[in-house]
Length: 292
Figure 1 (tube, rainbow, N blue to C red):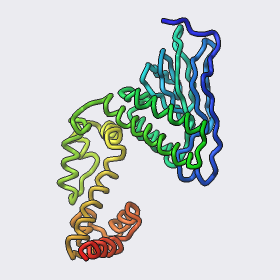
Figure 2 (figure 1 turned 90 degrees about the horizontal axis):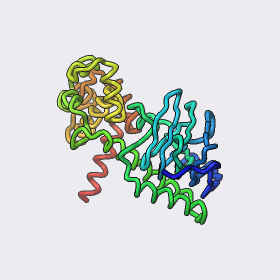
Figure 3 (figure 1 turned 90 degrees about the vertical axis):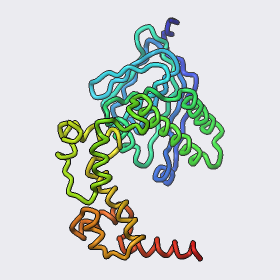
């Protein structure tokens, strides 16, 4: 193992100030860099703006998030959330080399919560060659500053987030569909019995778990809660009935497990931004135009 330098060596340090309009639309990169940590390196950013995504290239290190330490190895990506009390540093005697970006944008907080619902802010199973290439392209964009750089940076960050989702599943392979065996029975019940009044307690029992464990593991696997998943399955079925039948809105609400037209219409509009009647009219009109 190479002896780490006494002082941190900064190989790349890049800055960007996106427009307010860009921050409303795109994933925006504020800072980016490439460094080899020295023995003096320890960063603590309890309230810095944005989210820091750190790719470990060589050596080993740690991130502390809310008083818990997580190890970081070559090929791992650590996501350091702005809302958490955090710090990161190299392992003793380890020359920790990293690429990093600080990024923010629409729904980044929620993406972080979905990806770390299982607990760890460190991602293994990531294709490190693809990830490193993404960081390098971000560095190039920040240096060349093309006219469409905001859109270009957004595209690269989206690819990196996709790598994190793939890496999380690769690190926890459970089946061909990445759904744990314990969740298959309740998921099947929700798909086939969406018209029935299924409760979280009943679904947790099917999984052989407590309600709290079931809720936590379900969200880690699907990115949402059991009730939200069931509601969305009901709305999927309602879309089909609205297009393929002449059933009334009340009948469709009943057939999809709502039994109350008001709550059905409320959820439908929340998830589609259209009322059931507006959705039916729009989809049938589009279908007519396609035939014509």
